[in-house]
Amino acid sequence: MTDTTLADATNAPAKPATKPARPYFSSGPCAKPPGWDAAKLSDASLGRSHRSKIGKQRLQYCIDLMRELLKLPDTHRIGIVPGSDTGAYEMAMWTMLGARPVTALAWESFGEGWVTDAVKQLKIDPTVIRADYGQLPDLAQVDWSNDVLFTWNGTTSGVRVPDGDWIANDREGLSFADATSGVFAYDLPWDKIDVATFSWQKVLGGEGAHGVLILGPRAVERLESYTPAWPLPKVFRLTSKGKLAEGVFKGETINTPSMLAVEDAIFSLEWAKSLGERGLIARSDANAAALDEIVQTRDWLGHLATDPASRSTTSVCLTVDADEAVIKKMVSLLEAEGAAYDIGGYRDAPPGLRIWCGATVDTADIVALGPWLDWAYATAKNG
Image (cartoon, rainbow, N blue to C red):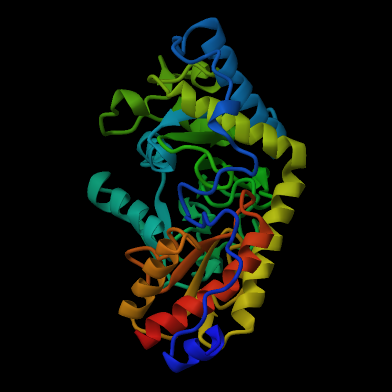
């Protein structure tokens, strides 16, 4: 009896012959860049104070690389801050909100988290504009006399804002963009963004724990002209004697960073520089297109984000024609086989799969994943 006949007889499909070479599809921390090796990281700053000459140089170099890659204007400051993207975004909220009314957009878990912070922690009564998972709120409803909180790319729903055209040029409020799954994957309109936050662990494939805070000139003006009513912990303080603490944006971090994580970020940024921002975007786009082809040729797979114009090209969320138990079994089977790691949907999202398509993933591995999804689906359904 041949292997194929045996597979048919037992109602279990044969395993695909080829596995993804790098089966790392987690949406954070994400796959390391191709060619990454811990032995390749510079160690000159390790075991040294972050306030030593070499420590400050490496932190500033990391900031300079981010500025160069993002083509960020000199008007915008870049700071390395504690607490990953969450810490960076909460730092922005705690230091700048309260001066104007607030509008919060929520269409996935992290947007809802910022609503919770505004309502329950800061005791602000924001206007909340919501949409279900897979959908985008009506952006035309936004009142730009308010400060506006939103996620550029909803990591847990796979829905992103299509562009920056909906952000008013003559806005009175500040735009606060949680852009952690969007920076380096989209061409962001920096003239429309007053505050942006992200983490190295997403599109760069870096380590967690540290966030990046980008401030436009209007955000700096807010910080220097407004003092919030609530107390600020030390790790959130961005001003001194009414002026911006410029050192934070020159590598003089508020608290002690991991220099190993900084060196890892520098490795990723130097790899990214070899491609350029357009090259990074092209890699994400190619990965998303390859995954979309897999979805389009399988009637049991679908996109949670139904509108291609607002569908993420990094954190792609998929629906599966099966119950939650089957989906969980698929995820476990693929991990056990070393064919795909960490592709289960986010815990608060509808049951499904979430496959990272950011720039550090190779398109060939997305293509190789398709037959493994078939195998896992059939095996889980028949089991």
